[in-house]
Every structure is written in structure tokens, then in C-alpha cells.
Image 1: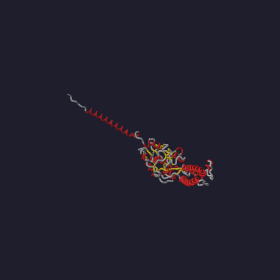
Image 2: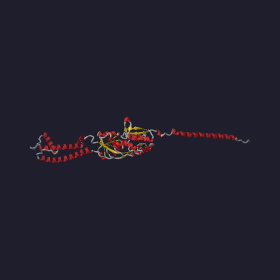
Image 3: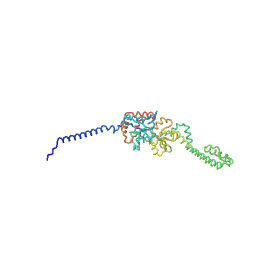
Image 4: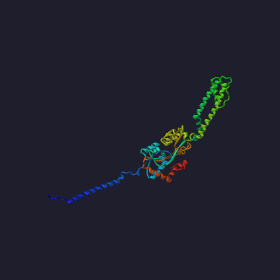
Amino acid sequence: MKPVVFSVSGIVSKGRVRKGLLGLLSLLMLSGFLALNLNAPSFAIANPQSEIITVATRLVPPFVIKGEQGKLTGFSIDLWQKITEQIDRKSTLVVYPSLLTMLRAVEQKKADVAIAAISITAEREQKFDFSYPMFASGLKILVRDSKSSGFVPNVLRDLFSPALMHIIGLAFVMVMVAAHLVWVFERRHPRSSISKRYFPGIFEAIWWSASTLATQAEEMPKGALGRVLAVFWMFIAVLFVAYFTATVTAGMTVQTLQGEIKGIEDLKGRVTATIANSTAAEYLQSRGLKTLEVDQIDSAYAALLNKNVDAVLFDAPVLMYYAAHEGHGKVSLVGETVRDENYGILLSINSPHRKAINEALLSLKENGTYQSLYNKWFKSSLDNPESPI
């Protein structure tokens, strides 16, 4: 048997080839891994700084005002512009017709944030996130200015008020009853001035009854029953005149000179206008008060001036601005602030913009920019120099 001879050189050459192939394959895999990781940001991660923030808002002077050529201005708009400068971002504003549609835009991701005059509430915190408070507010009552319509129209209004019409109707019934009784008692008396015939006898009896009620009777009945009736009727007349005087004095003096609504308790039995789905609407409903809910604050002002409602309950700074400008001499604010509230910038839950917006708000407060914006929109017109934040 021949011995088996192994070629050492052949084994070595084959081992080197295998090692070379494995090394080349490893090098290719490492290069591919590095290439994927180095190039990943260009297609897998978007740059947040390049995104344009969509902002939902609504018209509510002086926070959001539609100026010349449709350009938006106002306290909230100016504040948002300063915030975007702080965080170095671009944004686009979208105006919504009502508070509800604006909130839904953020909830449905059609807008990233919302800014106008949005109150921070526990219920809204369940669906949205809010920035730090950007404005201190509260609810106030707006009524028609009693002096704006003049003295004569106010007096005529009070003369034809339901309460006074009720008294006049009651007096008419009393006069007619007394007139028929005295005609029955006096028509056959020989010295009586009242005719036996129904006409004109009843007119003579009505004249006597009415003049006695006004304590101006010139002649007394002649018969015994007629005189008993006259004494009783004169006693009734004294009581009636006292009641009439007290009612007219209380109604005309208080309503004309002092006004009817002085606070939230005076809204009972009256209709109050406010914005639908607002904190003011919730407050009125919680107290069981009659409410007219509208989408725009201008509609509430129109309803008040047209006497379709008795008052408007809404955010104090909004009503104060209107009373100092378009409503000057037509409306006035009454009572104390009903409930303190804070406005905030509304964002979707876990919004990536919240931290940057909060930092910008604090910075604007610290460097005096916020105070300058507040003075521009509120201090001169509302005469309130204190900063609300």
C-alpha cells in the first residue's frame, strides 16, 4: 500500500482564499451599514425647523381684528408674531367662523395651534394642551346705556310698560263697576244729576266715578245708597292713588335714572346674549338663566342694541374694548367681574411646539415686549395700566 501524501501548499492556498473572501464580504457589509446610517437623516427624519405652523384663529376684537385689505391684526396676532420670531419659525393663519370650529380644527389636526381669546378650562385640558397663560380675563355684563336713547323715549317706554298698563286696566274696570252701581242707585232720585236713561246717564256716572277716583269729584250722590257707595269709593280711591304713585315712582325712577341691571342676579327673567360653546354660555346655563347663543360677538352686540336681549355676558376685555370704541355712548359695563379666567394658546395633546412657545412667552415677558403689546392694545383705551400676566 502506497502512503497517502498531503500537499501542504494546496491547503495553505485554499485557506488564504477563504479568508480573503470572508474579509471582503465583511468589509462590504460594514461599508453598507455605515452608508445607511450616514444617509438616514436625509430621508428618514424630517427637519422640524422646516415645517410651517398652521394657526387657527377667529375674529374677536381687540385680540384678532380684520384690518385693511383683510390683514389680521390685534393683540393675539402681534403676540404670535413675536413668538414666531423668538422660536425662528414660519406660520400661516387660518380664520374660522366660530370658537367651536376653531377648536375642532386643532382637534382634527387641521391646525397645529389656535390663538385668539381662548379660556383655559379643566374640560378643555382633557382634549388639548395649553401654553402658559397669555392674558388674565373674566366675565362681565354689558347693557344698553339708558342715556343714549334720551329722556323722552325712556319716559314713553316706561309709560307703556306692562306694569303700568296693568294698573290702568285695573282702574278702568273699577271705574266701570262703580259707574254702573251709582247709575242704578241715583237714576230715580229727583235731585240727582244722573239721567234715568242708560245713555247719557251712564256717561255721567262714569265721569263721576273717574273724577272721584282721581279725588276731583264736584258733586256727591243724593240718595242714601249712592252716598254709602260714594264714601266707600272715595276710600278705595285714596288707596288706589297711593298704590299708583308708589308703582310709578319705583318703576320710572329706578329704571330711568339707575338702570335695571346692576349685576348677575338682575339677569333672572331676562334674556342674555353670549357666544355659543364659550365659558360664558356654560356659566349662564349653570345658573338657569335665559340665553341667546350666537357665533359672533358682533351678533350679540346687534341683538343688544336692537333690544332683542337685555344684556351681553362675555369676556371683560372684549366688552371693554367695544364699549370704548364702536359702542361708545350706546352701551355700558355694569357689576363686578363675574368669574376670573386666563387665556392660553391652544395646542393638540403632546404637541412638539408647546415647550418652545412657553419659553418664548416667558422671554417676551422678561424683556418687556409683552408689556409693550399690552399697552398698545389696552392701556390707552381701557385705562388699565396693570399687566394681566
